[in-house]
Length: 187
Length: 187
Ligand SMILES: [Zn+2]
Ligand SMILES: [Zn+2]
Image 1: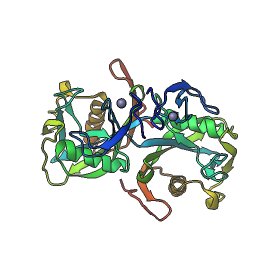
Image 2: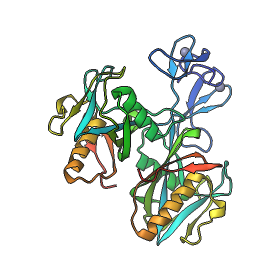
Image 3: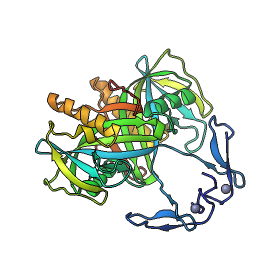
Image 4: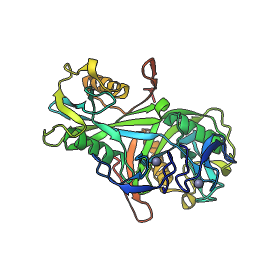
């Protein structure tokens, strides 16, 4: 951020009165421009005991397999965002069964939320951001080609819970996915 | 938003190629400025069977009682945000016991997340944004003077669960709090 979105003048970083963090503040109109984490919402879509994954047609991680998920939009709920992303990326209508995982990713200012979901009619396909979609049995998950650490983590938890036939809500965080993970699954 | 935060030129609303929503797009550098919901994180802080509330020293809802909560910041987790807000507003250090409620408030582009928490040592006070803090027994909650619908909803759920001594994770949404609420507590 270089310019004020309200008046077009330059911003500079300073700590506003009563605050304790550097913010972008306009040198002309004094507007404070806060920046906050974004929510990525998605689903673990299940049909006939198999899990629906999409192969990404966009960067980053072009060609890798992912759970359908994407940025939550203004004016929608987390449930609606998860349903919408599943429809857009996998062309699949789902019934939401419950919240499943929340994974904080603080170094990229994101919170990933996945809901358990069931396909409504078994139909699916490839949306504009997907090369293809495919149902995978639990022993067929393409672990070598999974897109993102939060998707891998959610799938790992899901398969464990599937064995126990008991699905909790899992809260965890991934601090630096390429080096180490720290989880707080007991929360 | 009137001006591009990247280059300072005017933005206009248009639907980018491959998108299906109006976005603010710069007329000069073509940067697309996405806008996304914000997370408000807080706690239900408990000590000796009582619930800690803060009386707001700021608008909106100056003078009303609230659970400690506020905007999640970049580079922190939802748990850290909830702990930080509890320390800032109620001067209370807490141990987080588990996720409790997620309430989508789509008409103001917010997602409210409350964690169950226990005071570490019984100490609390009034932070800069609070007039005072006070522990309330379950039959003393000042229902007439609660700050926000998401706080009321979370307290109502919490007291019900307290009776049963069983705390789930509650997902719901509040669409137009001054007229009607729609909940999906079964998710
Ligand atoms: Zn300005
Ligand atoms: Zn620009």
